[in-house]
Image (cartoon, rainbow, N blue to C red; front, side, top):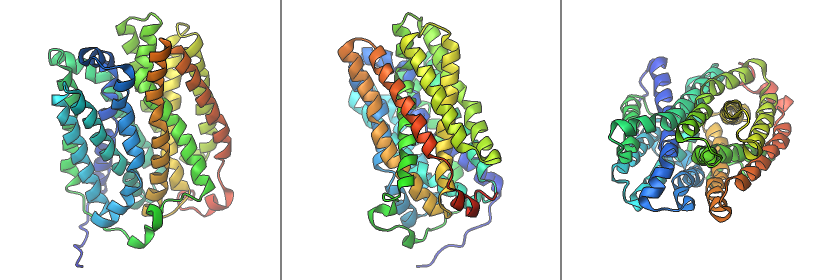
Length: 400
């Protein structure tokens, strides 16, 4: 088979493509949070069923992540990412017809599918195009992802007001950045991968104990983040805060993730202290969730800010971990695919179970106490994620 030579391309364009893709990996999920009570009441849906709008994308992100390396081999890494941007944009645009519950929930499935494939491949993309600058580029990658997530959570409410409270327009507007990203990605030269790197079972490192520790940490922090992205505002409403106060606290939780997502990966690269930073994030998350569970009206702004900083930081640091374990772009994609596959499959049940327990008990306190316990287990896993000295010394990433 003849292959088209890869054209030289400015690194700035490669970077812009990465940033735009990262921005689109969260708004399709977080944009529902500020409207979830409104939509549930208007469509007469239970909280457990509404949680599917968050849980199904996360589940898809897990189930389909192993497909990513195979698609990269078949179509090329860059072109597959472009297709994911098209899928995300089309799925979000479908929410114009979101007054039909089936359409609304179905769009969440397609959003999750696009994110599932793009996530692992973007890690490989960084490994390929930014050798020697992985730490800094991952910082911008996670920062851009957090911008998208925070934008979806914070701006959807005001955008819905601009559209005369037509919430389906407020949701569908997030198709615009995805389509913009698609236009840029169509300019990025495509490169085929080596099929030999994809073995049986998708070539994922299922037998690597270290990969399971990384996956476990990622699963818990992702479950916590997406559960809070769904139910944190509702918890504040339950304890007596006004809708404005609740949305302000939720916005604080999301927005503080911007500096966290950028600074913590940079610190991990600069001082080789990612395990210590993960431990700090785990302890902080546990304390903050405990306060929100038992004393939610005591210094709520402080706990919302610290919790957002810790969870966004732990997510950004999790993205870095596979890059310190293996050395080739597709190998990084495979480790990341396993982390996302098992991690998201496990974490997808957390928002649903939280909604169901709330329906059963009539209160968010019990599920939030369980979330506090999950955050505490992250502390143990953080201890287990100390660097492997022999590998770190020989890793190209560690030597940067």
